[in-house]
Each structure stands twice: as C-alpha cells, then as structure tokens.
Length: 256
Image (tube, rainbow, N blue to C red; front, side, top):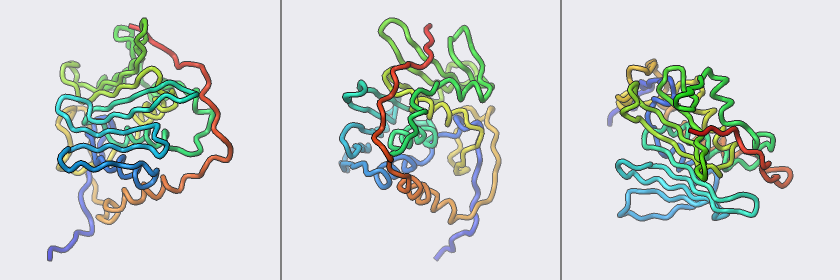
C-alpha cells in the first residue's frame, strides 16, 4: 500500500480571478449538504441540477463547450422579479460561492441589501475606463460593467488577456438580480487573498499576470477543507425576525 503523504504541494494564485475554476463541489456539495438543496440524478447527462428547498431557485452546472457552465435562476416572488446569473467555466468557484453563500444565508443583515456593487472595486483600486464605461482592475485583465440602455439592464464581468481578444471567463447578472448578491460577487472578485490550487491545474491563460507562490500544506487540511466549509455554512444562525423586502433603490447604472 502506498503511504499517504503528510504534506502536499499547493500553489497560491493572485489575482484570484486568474486562479481557474477549482473544485465544483465547493459550491454543489455546500448547497446540498449545508443548505438542503435537492438534486436529480441522470447518469447519462454530465450535468448537475440543484433546487432550493422552497423551489424558488435552481443552480445548473452544465459543462457545455463555448457556453456558460454555471447558471443560477430565481423565480419571481411577491417582493421581487425573476432574475438570473451565469458564470464561465474558468470562473473560480470561490467567487461564485460568494453569491450562493449570500443567497442561502438565513440571517443576512438587511443593511447590505442596498449595497453598491462598484464599491468593493473602488476600494480595491480599480479605475474608471470612460471608453469602455466600466471599472477595470489595476492589471487591466478584469472589467465590470453595468450596461443599462433602453430596456437592456445587465451586469457583465469579463476577464480577458491584454489584447482583450481571448476571454478567460465571463459572468453575467440580469438587471433584476438583487444588488447585494452582485456586491458579494464583486467583493470576492476584488479580494486580495490568493486562491489555492493544485500545481497540475494552474491555468495557462493569464499566466503572465499571475503571482504564484508554492507551499507545502498538510494533506489532511486539503482533504477536509470542503468538510470544514460545509459545517461552517450549516452552522449559520436562523433569522430572529422575518426578512424585510429589498429597498427599491437601484445600484448606480452605467450606459454605453
């Protein structure tokens, strides 16, 4: 029997939006085991469908080439319209998880419901690009735009190479998506802490802009990271009073 190593090699990648997709279970296992989302099994289809306990929200992971792999859809309610969000295959799961963790939080502070999605980016030093009507990361690789023109109202997040010709990944939020969910995403997008990855799964796209640090970590810590995350999410407190409806103040808009 091959002995299990005590330590394994891990790479920490910054900026975090160039770390690659990561382990999908970081999202799917957490939703199912910690938040009670149900799933259907179809062994002939390489996809995952998860539905919230109240049947209002659905997450779809469908590895279709040249399409968005992740989609979150939420049905219309008495307090809010239907909305959707989607994420490309190379979107780091930790950044997507910021959205699903916020969506499923049972005791979300109501003060965050009116948050400005641009605020975390400005605080992280992202700058205005008047030509593209967007906020752009310091390295120029990531771009966030709120496109509002006529009946169009959507948020786009693009990560691409220096020439903007080859896209690394794209995220999309419909204009009716709750602002605090978009803010959760931009906060995770602009975060300074690097993301850990297996050295064999470091993406090539954007490598010239990556800052990679190799370290040795206990194998047990890596093996139980997901279990620790699930337990932490499951232990979140229940609300002490019924949640209030989101205020009707839209986030700052930008038009092309």
